Length: 277
Image (cartoon, rainbow, N blue to C red):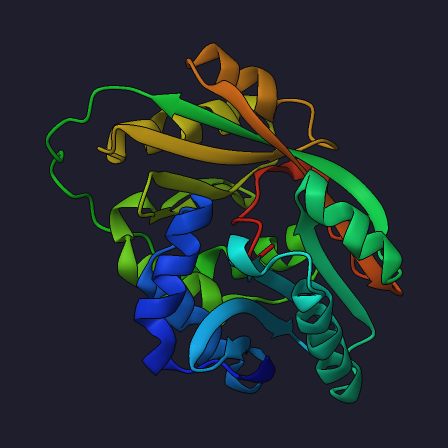
């Protein structure tokens, strides 16, 4: 088994690997990783067969996000996940990034704790299953630059390039709510392989969050919708449950290093996704 850089040529293999574990990412999501940080994405390869992956994105050289740590079931228990995580962490250390973050599954949390990751807070995935419907008339997408400062404040670091990519792929899921003081809430979303993903979903009030949630559910036409609600937020989980969402799984946000840019998670109803933050 050898570790090497992940490339666009690996897309068919990584999609098969992702599908085997039942995750929601698309080929466009894998390309987002490679576009954002091609030298920080890794593959485990055995005799020409891709058996594991790990990705990373660096935000402002202040925080790095590790994601898509997958090992094919047949090759588990051989230390491949640890090797991929260690390779990603060594790369990020060499880049001088002071803080690494990730969203851990219950199984992955034990591994991350061994590598020095500390719990920040829990994330609950909620899932809505409904009848799919025809697309409504597509509204004009708002200018994304109006939300970037609020997103930086709430997330903790700038991720304008990533949000721009999401908005281009799903402009109908972009919403911006404003009052005389400026932008007070927004949503973006993604069309995944299993479901539409709501996130980021940000609001400075529960009433604004409710309007944005209903607007997103109207604009999304998928039969399934996922949203990952962060535990410091008090309005997100009750709101999605009132709209028919059910709890799906628990994740844990973890960090390694100096968590100097935690943002304002109490204003974030749904995060972008466990692979992006």
